[in-house]
Image (cartoon, rainbow, N blue to C red; front, side, top):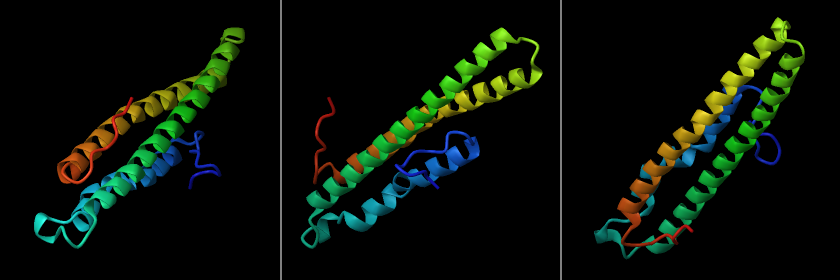
Length: 144
């Protein structure tokens, strides 16, 4: 689904969303992952909860970072296309095909930008759940 190098397909918005959905799997399954890997107090002797929480946190942060990077790359690419189309429209304001393409790209850009807000909500929810279950086992490093 993702192109080589883990980048999203920025051309087709439905593919863009599909790849993001796959990339958000770790966040969708965070509660299950915590329930199955972080022991309750009565079973705490059998599993290294500190190491488990640390690994889960690191993979979650890596996923958040790669999604953020991928979305921003697509926003930058689409912004560039919108800029080029605007220049074209300035030279030829009667070209309906150009105007239609510009509107389409502007809409796609707005949708991609809204994905950053979705990311924020998804990330906050995952971190909240993580903190609830792992706070006694592992404290993540402070983000600068």
